[in-house]
Image (tube, rainbow, N blue to C red; front, side):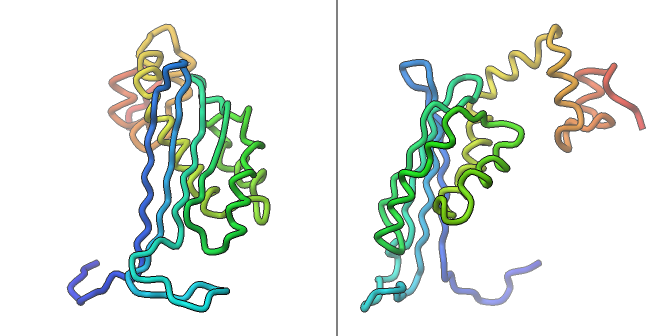
Length: 182
């Protein structure tokens, strides 16, 4: 695919994901989504154009988690939305408390917050927020994974992604007894 043809940016979506360690021993993962148009545009139910570059969405979601990735708190802040009533979705995240960011997270989020129960863009942020938390806690997980006594963690990692395929060099080198040579 080439971009030899002249092109013009029409829409820009920025997603910023960050992970924080708190002084109380918990962690926060924060996701922000900002949508802007590069031309003036008219929002529904308005009588005037929004200027070019004005955000259509500016939404921040914060999850408070522990080291086991259990959700202790969830909040949203919607600074800019297409409709004033959208900000009511800030109050819809309570069902996430007590869930674990891990296998099944996206499915649970979509089930609990589907359709009119929440904001589509909040739900969109929650998936990559989980993987950001996973990366934020990587040093602790890797220490446990590198411990030879944690065979169950080794077995769980095999075939969990491309690099950890049982026939690829990562598994063959780290855990030869779990690898298969092709």
